[in-house]
Image (cartoon, rainbow, N blue to C red; front, side):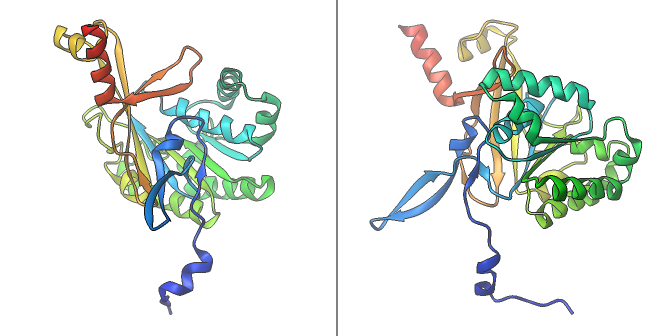
Length: 286
């Protein structure tokens, strides 16, 4: 028979609230509320909420995988074990990407090599099509390598031909990460008809409804003189934005922020979109 709990009984099982650093300004965009001298103080969490499962979504070429890779390198360089399940990109290409990312942010690549564990589902139909086989492989890796965080890039690749099963499949992996006490990132792809600024991805809102929060990456091609005037960017350039769409675990900044992908392939979050536009206007007036 299923049992019920009084709230006080859950205190010993409740996770501590602190951040798992991403190596980006996102670390300052999640926060918790504390009381000091009778006043409520908002304090940056320092990263993604511990034991949260976050969804990173966006149209192609918005930096989703780059953000996941930067998180992996940041954590591995700090000495934590990361399980990277690569569904789209063969593992040898992931090696090159993480090596370049390590050089870009000044990480010790020998430490990264030691602390990143890879499951290559991109070339294994069994792992892509059979969730139980992949979950068993992940469980073995987590147990043997003492993994603390898991990245799946992309979760969409596990149901790309069976989107009607998206909710069921995502729920299995979400529950798995909770059971194994992992901080997780699911990268999800959008379909062409889906609004680029929304949390929706392939499979509808299946991912966003199940996970603890969603980070939406977007890009806008500057195509008109009005956009040149508004954003202060030349025609043909790209304005990239990032937004925390929601998080059920802790408070977060809900503004849309402008970011850049540097020439080294790292994510650099610059300023809220409103402040960015204001700054561009002030430059023109000066």
